[in-house]
Image 1 (cartoon, rainbow, N blue to C red):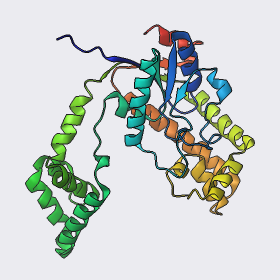
Image 2: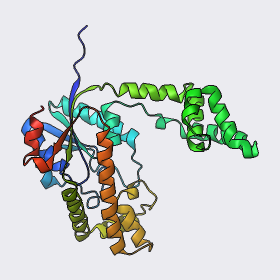
Image 3: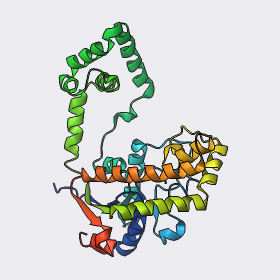
Image 4: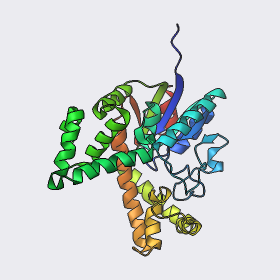
Length: 316
């Protein structure tokens, strides 16, 4: 039997403010593609300024997916993204176009690219019941609670016990709970997940855009200033007036949590602006660190080329 041909997928990733969206739009127009957002915040409706959401004009007629599709009251996580992105890829391919995954959320990209199987879909009630019982049994041992849980783990999954410190109760509990719910050692599960990363269900090209750090940071600072001029404070205030809570998933995005804190009186709007810039720069650094761990990535340095899309097309 002939081997099934893999679905083509192009990925354009990189740190915040590096120019991913513009590159994805131009590439899509040149090769007949549609863009699928791998951004954890642009999925929310009415959250436009703080997410630097691409506008209809900037899309230049290119269809975009996973943008403006859920309410700020809803939770959005990697499991939900993976399900929605898979379907978007299918729909784009069905239309005879090329799916272009674009964004800076590395974990989301990895989830789709390697078709990772997540245990977050466990029944929350079953999860809570098992953990509550384990904690009750452990606390009955008094000062020996931590060692009791670790000994339980050692009996069912010695390999995990070797890697997890005795006092890391959260990880010990997760490993024990995983074993009880799935009848599988978490060490074996993790090994299988790593093995899956050696292959992908897609025929993909993974591009990461980067730039001179000083130029990137300057662009981040200018973007934050522009967001404030465009009405970021008013956007956050409107969301709060709707009843979107500060602890909600949507409000945890950079820009939203700082303005939310300022409007709640924790510090001034001027300090909030400084914090947004600093946190955005730190986030860009973490994004680059994440992508450096990825395999088979093609790096495109904006400081060394005047035409990013021309460089990308060399590899297609």
